Image (cartoon, rainbow, N blue to C red; front, side, top):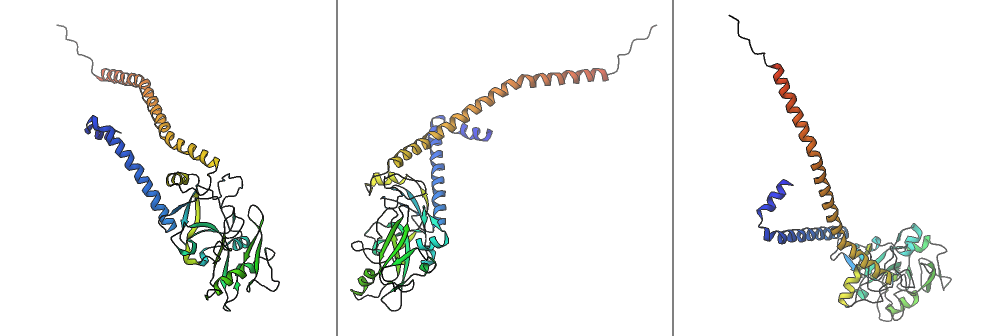
Length: 324
C-alpha cells in the first residue's frame, strides 16, 4: 500500500482520475484479450464464437429460451472439426448416450452448399450417409446398432444399402418421426450426371423437416462445408449484436431479453458494490486501529515504568559521609 501511495503521489493531482481510468481500461482490455486467446486455444478457430439468429434450435414452440438449449440470441463456441469421425450424429449419440444441447449427437455449423453467400447454419447432425461403390445407394454404419430406432419404406433396404425413405423414430423434445428421402437425394445427383456423394443429414431441433429436402437443397452436408461443431453456450448476449446489425431472424424470447438486461445491470452495479464493500471494510479497519492505539500506548508506558524501576533497584545506594 505504501509503495502504491508513493507512486500515486508522484502523479499531479489533476491527472490522477485520467490515469486511474486508463489503468482500469487497460485491465479490462487485458481480461478480454486473455478470454479470446483462451477461446481460440480451445476451439482452434477464429472467430471462435457464432451468434444464433433464429429459433430453429430452440426446445419450445412458445418461444421461451432454456439454458442448455440453443436459443435465439445465444453465443455458441465453434470448435474445429478435422474429419467425419470428429462428429457424432444423433443416431451415434442414441447408441452411445452422447448428448449436447438437450439431445443426442453433435450440433454442427456449416455453410450451405459450401458457399460464403449464405449465413452459416447451426443444426444437429442427424446421420451420416456414406455413398456405396454401386453409385446408386447409401450406407450408414450407425444404423447397424440402432435397431428399433429407424425404418425404411422399402422392406428390402438394410443399414448398408439404403435407397428409399428412411425414417428415424421418436426424435427430440416433440417425439417426432424424422423422414429422410434417400431416393430423392440419390436422384438429385444422378440427374446432373454426378456421382452420389457422402455427407451429413442435418435438422434444427425446432424444425419439422431435415435440411435436405425438396426446396431446401437435397445434397447432404459435405465435411468440407463444416466450419465446426458447437460447444458451450453464453446465453442472451448475442441479442446485442443482432439488434445493432438488424439480423434477428426470429423474435427474441421475452425471457432472454429480460435476463440480458438483468445481467447487464449486474455487470454495471457489481464493481460499484465491490467498491462500497472495500471502502466500508477500510473504514472499519481504521476505526479499529484507533481504538487499539490507546491500549498500545498504555502498554508502552507500563514497560517504560517497569524498566525505570528495574534500573533504580539495580543502581548502588549512595555512600554516607564519615563522621569526624
